[in-house]
Length: 337
Image (cartoon, rainbow, N blue to C red; front, top):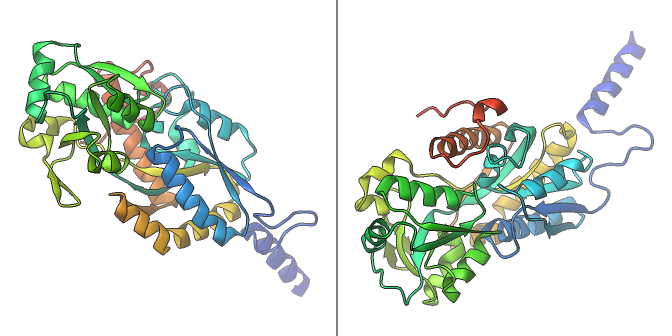
C-alpha cells in the first residue's frame, strides 16, 4: 500500500513538472527565441522586446527577438513559430491582427491553436502629413467621398487591425481611400512622413513621438471618446460620424503566444515570468509613457479575448468583402453583438 502511494506521488509530481524524468532538463535550460510576426520598430515588435527583456530576468535565460514578416495577418512568422517544436523555446510575437490570417487565406487554422499572453494595447488614430490640407476628420472624409480612391492611405498589411479600422472608417462614413499596405506600422508611418501616402492609420502608441515632433497631424481616434495625449486632446471620429458605432471600436491586443499543446509545466513557468514582468516598474512605466492600456491576461482569459477578436475581425472582414475564406470553413463562430 505504501509503495503504491509513493509511486502515485512520483507520477503526480512528474505530471506537474516539479520533478523530471531521467535525461529531461528543467525548463528553461537554454535561450528562447521570440519570432515577432511584424516588422522591427512597430508596436508589436517594441512591446515584445520590452516584455521579453523583463521575462528573461525571471527565467534566467536570454529571449532573443527576431522579426519574420510577410504573408497576411502575420501568417509567415506564425507558421515559422508553429513549425518549431512545441516546447516553449519558440514564442510567437503576435497582435490581434493575427486572428485574420485564416480568413485572409494565409493560415489554415483557427487562432485557438495558440495560447496567448496579452501585454496591452493602444487605440488607433487617423493622422495626415502636416502639409496636407486636412485639418479635421470631416475635411478628410468629405474629400475622400468627393474623389473616391484619390487619397492614398497607409496601414500595415491586409487584415491587420489598422487595415480593418480603415475599412470600418470607410464603411461608416461612405469615404473611399486608396489603401496601400505595408509590412508593419513603422513603414506605413514613414510613408506618410515622406509623402508616399497622405493618411496613416496606426496606434497612438506608435505615432506618439511623431505627433509630438510635428511629423504627423492627428485628426481623430477611432474609439468613442476623445483621447488626451500629453495635454493635447485628439477628438473622437464618433463625434462627427456616429454611424461608426456599427463597426467600431476594435481593440488592440499585443503580446506573444505559444502553441496550445505546449506542456502545462512550461506554460506555467512562462505565466509566472510574464506576471512578474507585467508588474515590473520598467514595463508599467513603458506602457504609461507610450499610451498603452495594460492587460496582463494569459491562460483561459487571454484565449477568450482572442477568440472574441477572431470572431469579430473575421466576420467583419467577410461582411466588408475583404476576406478570401468564409469564417465558417475554419469553425469561427459569428460574434455576439
